[in-house]
Image 1 (tube, one colour):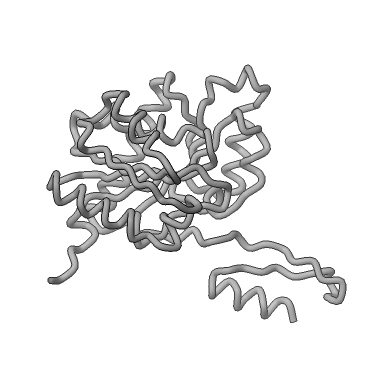
Image 2 (tube, one colour):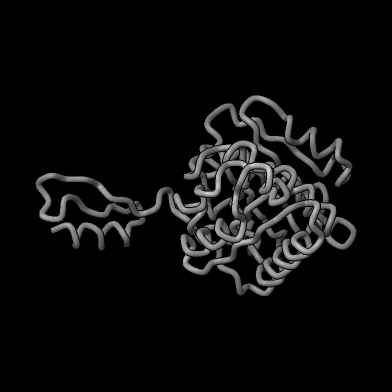
Length: 252
């Protein structure tokens, strides 16, 4: 059977980020903002539990049957990047059971700053940070921060309590992302929720028209290797094949 063109199926939107940044809450916010006009489904990832799925079901944001849990049994990034079989099957089953769907949101288990989705699993991805993790996190970079389709600085309503300058954190994030989209979000702030809603709708439109090409943020951002024998004290190394070739050329 021929493969269904990506633009003919639901937009698969990945949501990744460290533990506790509010990924499940963000998905609930998207469901509340768009659930009445779009046909949505959700897949959550946890290592040993279905806790995130149960949270979303209890929140009443969707028909509980439209929220599926994947128990990865391994490091969270394994199931969204290295071996996507479990998530891919879950997405296909969900789309078959509730066809047609407009968007399937896939939540990663909480991982570190290096976690990104394979473009074979999702069409676009959101990376989530939160102010409680510290205002300097956005400056630290990494593939999710640097190259996800959208970076969300979440829980901005907590900033006064944790001493974080949100505009500065957003500015640092924008610099780290070289101008790619950054959104400061609080589920209690209607303006920021409206901005998130608008971004999701724009991504859906680009997916349907075929104008959006899924990007691979890469397993790791280019990074510096110290080398006492190198004339400049080390060299830049990248895991992307093209960047790797460039880095190697500059290291000689």
